[in-house]
Structure formats: structure tokens, C-alpha cells
Amino acid sequence: MSQPGHPDIEAHIYRAIRTVKPSLGVVPMTPDTRFDNLGLTSLDLITVVFEIEDAYGISIVEKRLDTFRTVAEARDVVARLLDTGHGQNPRLAEEAG
Image (cartoon, rainbow, N blue to C red; front, side, top):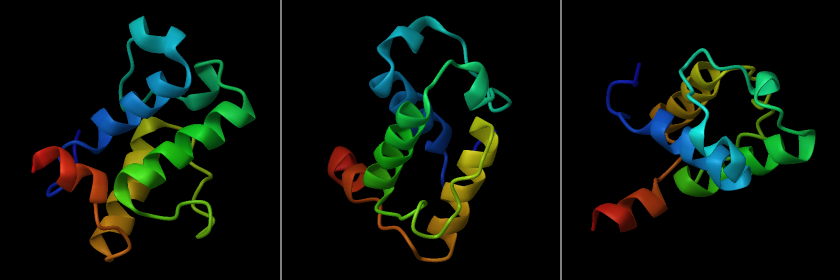
């Protein structure tokens, strides 16, 4: 389920995961997918978080919001940060433009 006003957050999270660990490219993922079930190392996971931060111009780690366990929880953190004005979607704006 996408967040209103932020329809592509899940897609960007899936893309970040597959960028960091290409072998997961064929693994089906849903909002309920747990990061610990994907075989991501702690370094992989923090790299996924950095990919998400870069894509949305937000700071998840700095705000100590990186304790999510599922794609849905990550999506909700990103949406909450964007809704409170903490992100600017710089890369998304470039892709649309």
C-alpha cells in the first residue's frame, strides 16, 4: 500500500534493496517483507537506508528512525519525514523533469 501523496516510496525501497544486493532482483517483496528475512547484512541494510535517504533528501539515521523491520515500516518512516517537510525529493524531481 502506498502512502497518499507519496505513491512510489515502496518502489524506491525495493529498488534500493536490489541496488545494494542485486541477487534479490528475482525475490518477490511485499510491504510485509522483513529486512532480516532477505539475508541483508547490517552493512547492506545501512547502505539501503543511505540509498533511501539520498533518493528523498531525508535523514533517517540522524533522526534515529532506522529501527524499522519491514518494507511497510520503512515506507511509513519516509512518508512521515516527507510529510513533516524533512525531504525535498531531489532525485525524484530530476527523474520527473
